[in-house]
Image (cartoon, rainbow, N blue to C red; front, side, top):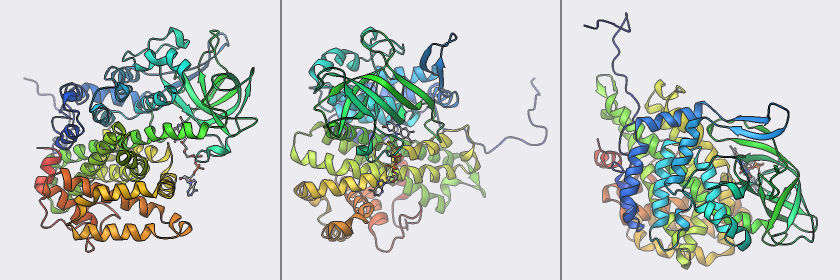
Length: 555
Ligand SMILES: Cc1cc2nc3c(=O)[nH]c(=O)nc-3n(C[C@H](O)[C@H](O)[C@H](O)COP(=O)(O)OP(=O)(O)OC[C@H]3O[C@@H](n4cnc5c(N)ncnc54)[C@H](O)[C@@H]3O)c2cc1C
């Protein structure tokens, strides 16, 4: 008999392992329903198989390793030749290969597959619950596709490698690769939000013009995933404003391009992914679009990357929620399970509602991207992408902290999923346009296309119509909109938040069970509820809390 006792002084009890070896899609009813609404049911078996793989303990171990063994920069080889190479732990490559093999980059751009955007969003959301760092190069590669499609010569060269589901980690010239990754370089030391402040200069090598070669001289202060095979870089031409350039890691003549990695950023989170500072020393670049028209190109890309931030933050919210629910269902305090404690139930109910509302919104946005040819869908895309990027990413920052607290001290130790989510969450709110910049973008969109907002509000009207609390909120939104622009600017966050909350309420009223929709409206829109400052403030008496928690993650 084995009488080995690890502890001489006590018995180990009431400790709860973190959730793994579970079925992330099978246990996510709100996601499955939204997938069906978005026409993506045909993708469900494949997504389900992938989700089961993601939920396995082995995958959780991969994610932990990729974030513990962080990327390392090798500037030179052993004999002093400059190589500017970033080395990664094998776990990173395995996770990247999973993203690629599941088609989580190019799936939405495969024409003819109805529901492809919903299926992609669901897959991205499932992957993001396991590991968020890999979403960065996936996002940038995906967002580059619609922009490159407008450059026929480049597109013809790159198409097959961009659409490939194969993972090729080798550092080789484009022509020798089976598949490629793309990054984006905008942000410089003197300013990131204001791309017009860029100083990097692009000088034509010959005649110049669309598709022609330029030499880029300058720097980027944030340049993520520098091991990508190419970056889309903003630089100024002498005669115009910012332009967009395709800057590969290798020149066509087979030599290394002059993109020197100065150092890797030491980051709060997002540790599996490498982010760097670079200098362009007359780097080779091809002009994309017309000279001086780089901003519209970047804005187009940003539309896609911002959706990905919404999906990524909704994923973090979901993973934080299920980890918290799992813990609360097994951990006891004061003689009862945490889940049985009324105050804990208020907190968990709030988290569950926030998560379901985030999923409903993200999946609705994905649908709008698929149907963007229709004006009402374009209105959704244009107004609600930046508003959702602001709101869902911000909620992610707060609620990953709240979910961490459900685990008490265990939540705060670095070995767990919670700490990783908490460190990761703020970056989605910062990059691709920080919170305020998103709200200003909503204001800009409304000023430019006031009719699009009306389309949006009209479309939602049937789902708000008979609900007095939402009618009051709608009137408050309209009152804000009637303010002079200078006054409204300072209220940009309030406007974006109101827009999102109304959209979420309408979506839940239309699609979720009545007890979820009622709880969302009662907690977010009742004058008597002190909701918003921190989670769990709202009065949940009279709401079907158990049904909400069971729906969120069946026990
Ligand atoms: C981990 C990481 C990776 C990144 N990777 C990349 C990358 O690969 N490529 C890339 O190009 N960039 C990248 N970025 C940069 C990121 O996109 C910028 O940090 C971001 O856009 C903000 O720019 P900034 O840091 O210069 O801040 P600033 O532009 O100086 O803004 C500072 C603050 O002021 C606010 N603000 C700005 N203007 C206004 C205004 N008019 N009114 C009110 N508030 C305002 C902003 O919202 C922000 O909160 C990365 C950043 C991080 C953290």
